[in-house]
Length: 192
Image (cartoon, helix red, strand yellow):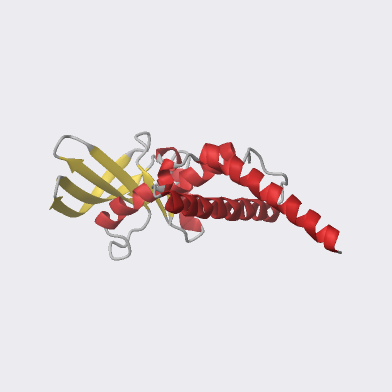
């Protein structure tokens, strides 16, 4: 299930995902026209109303119209959250689960922000899809290792990991690892 913000909620992307047998869950882009076909559910939740609609999305001009679900939560104070998904089976993904899953995209966006801004990964160094994937996986592993180290440091300091700035911590951690490797390499060279 691919999670994304409204920028990605296009009929063209849903067409590509469906053709590949994949699924997406995106915040609704108001530019995507919807035609209501059938209300699948409506339930009152604490704080508002959750509706799930089967809709036809798009005009058919740039891509074929797509059959999607439009999940809409209207809070008591007028706050509205709208999602689009091509998971048509409500047993596979309920409206409530979709609303719970959507905020998880922030973790992924944080990863890419850190990769770009903190680890200085502004471009890929190859055009080959496998090479790009390998670079992305390697960067993801480095990011995960840095986040684990951040959690250990926070635990020792008795604070929450989120209170440690990745922009400051990651470069210092990388420098410390580099220095440790140099010292270790120097010690091994001297003992040989």
